[in-house]
Length: 245
Image (spheres, rainbow, N blue to C red):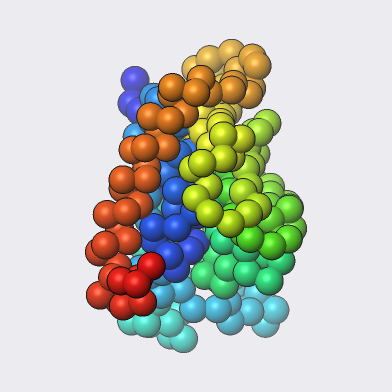
């Protein structure tokens, strides 16, 4: 039986920050549940804002669309194909002014073309997929970002599992917060469990939430922290101020 594919999308400009860290924990949870994973940094791609083709005529919004407004300037098609090739998606975002980051918002707006295929073929291209979400921020807004993502994806035809969202609200290393690590790990496990349940591969998970033993949590945190520190070193040339931090 082929492994499920889970795609992680990091919506933070800080490739090594808390958003990446909790997303990576979630993907390790998905891997432990038997899935194959891939992580993409959205800031590596150019996704231009939606041009509201739908508002001119609802049938003008479709996928794929060779749009002259974006020809040669935009990576949305590449990202959309990655999403469509995956069985489940985990979107992680920092909190920017009480909501998701701009790159996440642009991507989700453009994903309307996938959902709007319901008017062309009778089915959203996202119909039946599974998603989980993570939001990270020092100030208020994580709940609003998660609410927006959950509602929007569900209205595009996507299933959201129990405990399919996680957040970290605070300063410092999120990997030091036991609850945040356990929550993120369960996001990964549950998107796999939900996908397998929908496909008849297994009975529903029970219980849907599992607290990680301290030893397991520390092992995961240590591994992800090392990966994040390596990414931080790689980013030092682009972010010279990191040398003094």
